Length: 306
Image 1 (cartoon, helix red, strand yellow):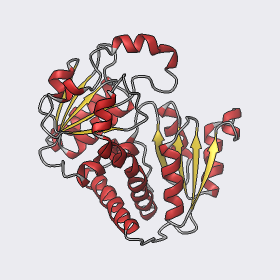
Image 2 (cartoon, one colour):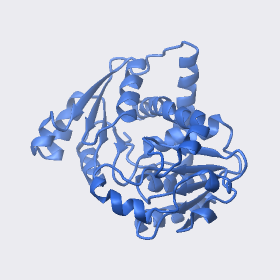
Image 3 (cartoon, rainbow, N blue to C red):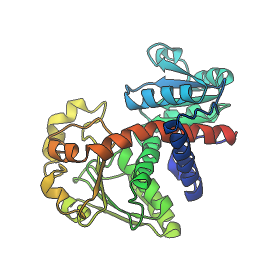
Image 4 (cartoon, rainbow, N blue to C red):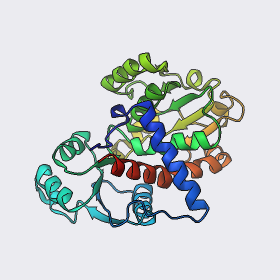
């Protein structure tokens, strides 16, 4: 049995296999072919953080695969009233076939998975957001940007930056991360990425200079500067991230026709300008749709490897 907590736990071959499976399922769907590969299976979805794309994509995906998804807000279950994580895990995993959790601390996810009898999927933690990276790379493949891939991540050294580090170091492409001082990626994640990169041939760079990071990049990506739980830091963060907005002037430094990706929600005028987002809306909203298809591939893959 496999859990999906971080891309760190997966090989290049396994990551690509999951994405290719998602692409096949997507092609079938577009052709009106519905294969109930998870018929009569149940996915428990535990949300300790709010969500739009994560809930809709997992719930719709399970339905299209012939299964059923249960939405479980932490406000509605005993986990939110102080029941130990290990007890909730034992109970839910005895009744459901798969569990997706969207939470704050990554340690909560790891503890839940350690007591679960069924596969557990990371729907987002403060440290990693691996399902988003499946959708991102699926989009890169669909649009033909995988050759000589050079990705520039501009912004906060958060769960998205960590997940890009894992993907690049596993698949072997070039990644340049630019963050303001004080907002760097975690040392342990960077260390892991450098170690994996020695095996895959990936090139990893981390700096405080967005102009250097974006120069000749084929893919540019960013994320919100103010994640859930950081709202009280908004004024300080906006000041600290001055010069890190992905706008027209910054995008001009990337390679011509560079792809722009954003995991959404996007806050125009902060991490990205309205012009850049609207100019690249085709790929950004394809990326959002691909959450559905990539996660369907993931769930089918995990079910096959139980």
